[in-house]
Image 1 (cartoon, rainbow, N blue to C red):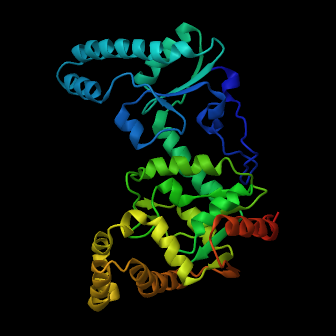
Image 2: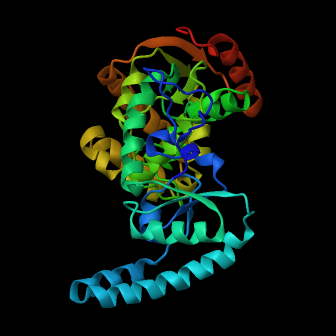
Image 3: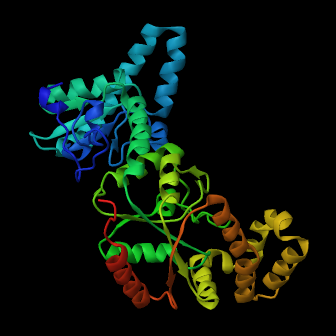
Length: 372
């Protein structure tokens, strides 16, 4: 690797104790964004589980070919190499025609595979032979994954957070988006996790990423932030659906003062209907999903929900869900987390204009770091 490939370019000056920078120099490469192409040479299945954000999946062998070569290698290694080389040559030719041919002569490439072995070398040798400067992650995705874990643990506590708390249906996510439009640094954890964080939180047609992919997306987001400015985030438990949040991030969020949103119950019912429209259109199905709560709310309350659903009384059903389940659950969660209570933010309405006014006011009041 050329000497200048060891030079990293810090993104927004994100520093951690000791003066080091959270960038890929620890992997022996440049900043990801400086490469014309970041090539993931692994199979589609491996890529789907996790990859460097922005990487293009150009496998040297596909899933079926990879399995075939592996099985053949156990019987006859030489024959397996012959079959594998045939697949590699054919796939590289296709990728060069469809993708590499569109690159400019001075473009620089980055390649990685699982451990930085044969699949990476097939790409690197080919690209360098064509004339492209090409770097490789020595140790491959395994080393990258370790870097992600270590970086999340180091970087998460370094920010000053503004944590929006409040009962279900008080529009925390909507306010986050309004704050982002106002120019603030916003970390939408539920957006990254593709889940709203409750029993009803699964998003139709939008499955959650793997844990590893979520970690990659989270680090990519955090690395874009400026340490000298606060990060706005919604209060979360340690899990969002099936996704575990990094302990360092959860602890940092709980140690800061929360801003408590207070929204009238009628407005919360309206937001619940809008945000969960795919469920309120079929209230019986919604109540069916809530059946596991019977031990918590009692059989009588669950029977009432079923009756309201059968009668099509969706507003009253949403109101009961908020007052008899989500609000008590939120209070218990706050007591367990022991988060500091901060300012109460009164929001009489959550329409676009009201959100814009609230976001502008919060930016003025809380938009600067207090400890830097």
